Every structure is written in C-alpha cells, then in structure tokens.
Length: 66
Image 1 (tube, rainbow, N blue to C red):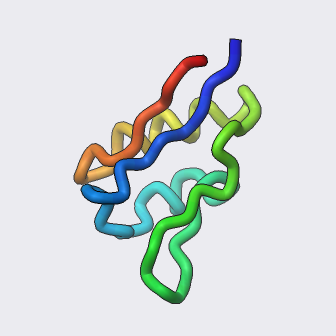
Image 2: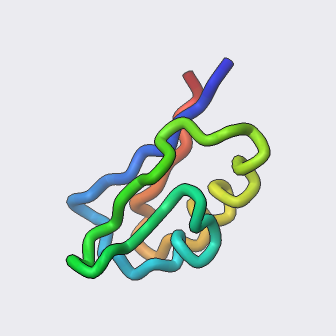
C-alpha cells in the first residue's frame, strides 16, 4: 500500500519549515510558494514527512495512505 503527501494550499503560509525538515519533498521557491517535489515519496522519507506534518504551524500538510 502506498502513501502520498497532500498540502492544503489555502492554509499553507509557505514558511519553509517543511522544506527544512524534508528538502527532498518540499521546496519554497523565489515566488514564495510551496511546491511538493515528490507527491509519492519512498518509504525511506516517511519519517521526515511525518516530522514536517507535526511541525507545520498551520497544519497544512497531511499524509494520505492509499
């Protein structure tokens, strides 16, 4: 069973905390918007994504098991 990263862009403030935790998955670019680089990251990155979910101040990130 796989999983994916979901961001609520209506809530996201693009503060880059998630990028600091998991730069393989998240990137805030010069336009000050968050981009999900890997919507379906490998299981090796799940602990980092889980940490990004916990640390997001707006709770805009979720993990959805598929």
